[in-house]
Length: 110
Image (cartoon, rainbow, N blue to C red; front, top):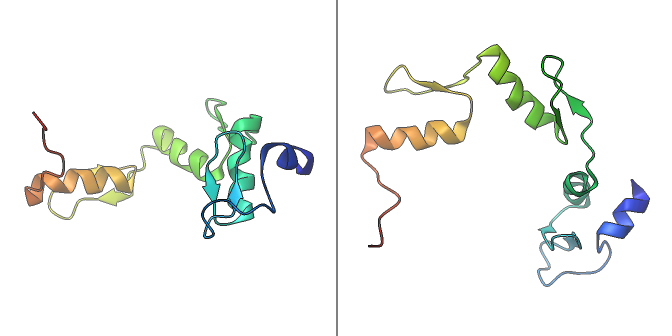
């Protein structure tokens, strides 16, 4: 991976943002930590070491596999406190909560 890291990144060169000095030269995305860039590079390199034992889909990140496994197990750990709805992802729960709060974060520009 070290060889690929040198090919695909500007490690050691400061990007235009001092808080994110590690830049992927494949897509110009910047990272604050070297390990985050290394994880990101797996996407470009096609490295997908985490495989689902049920359907054999593979993922570059363990967290993505864990999220995927919920499709097989039916696990929905994010429960709405206002109703019986539950979700596999926190984002979906947050989005759902707008039903109860009446919040409409997106408005039509027309």
